[in-house]
Length: 152
Image (tube, rainbow, N blue to C red; front, side, top):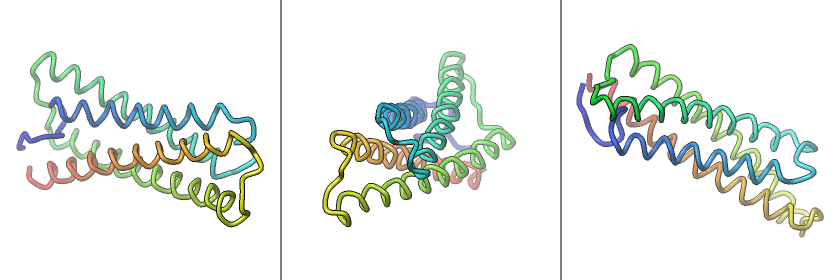
């Protein structure tokens, strides 16, 4: 298998995984600091999805650190296949959670005229923006993994 930017065991792969983890953790932090997020199913789903994203991305970041430290290549077909499936699943869940939470946020800001929850509305918007940033980075990783699997 080829070794190009973003593949497991490279510095760019590690940067992608750390950014996924940080964006997802930031989204969880913003959403969890509000008092009323549990009243909305979409926001609860966002926290669950981003929690899964944090676990998946941090696990693969640790694998990248190990591969970089030991100078090992982690491009076996079975391992890359697992990465492809995991990345596509987490990417799909992250997009669904971010889009549904964005829909609720737009409903309160645009359709109802104003958000009645005060400063919590800004936290909702920030959490959704960070969730979309997390999804963008996981989408890049999943495309790289698919490309790596197809080229192997």
